Image (cartoon, rainbow, N blue to C red):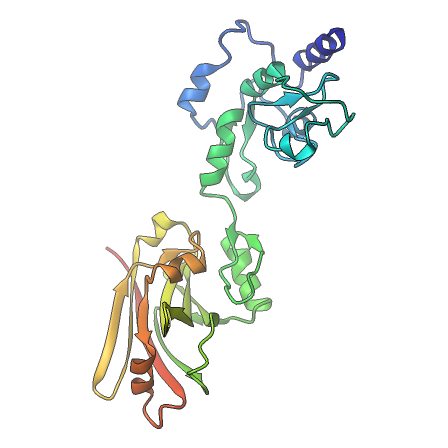
Length: 305
């Protein structure tokens, strides 16, 4: 096992990664428990560009977390990819066995790294094993495009997404906190699980997405309108909105809190968190011969005091 010892010794002595801990039985446990955000890097702060050489899985290219596996030649890979390579090292093709790379796990435990969303404004420095959890909840992580009609995969900050919606999806943009929209469909009996319309409103220095669509609720075709806030859930709770649809002396109203676009369009729709209109009632509101859907949805947005 001499080659393994040489390999691990080289890992321990890489100066850009870690100052060897004074006590091998205690590897910065207090930092992992407290997980305080530090805006000023410590002396043993590791340059993120050096991390992939040691901690990037050669198969999935993601960061590795315990248990980190290695072959007899010292090549490593993550536990998730080990079954995928049929117990063969993807680098040298030797059998993997059940060798665990404890040295590399200790190196990782001593690292402090910036959040991967630092370019979006996050200034936090986190212990390696706390970094993944933070990034899954980081308030600076990019948002997914809220346009639902094409399952768009674009991500970015709010200003980027607003421009993207306007230029690429040709979404209508409106200023103001009140709206009065008319939705028309020539054959309302052809209800599909498809988005009809997305409109973006700018008010109170924020952006809101108004969705209106047809979908199946069990065996019944229905229409739903709901509002989403282009920002985090904690900010969305500072606003409220109301929707109203009606005609011929009758109306349906809805009042709620806009959902953050952190929640997917489908999640909001399938929770029925909005104004739901049964097809028969929608056709009644439309009047005429009930062969054409003509709905007028009015509403307003306000900021809670």
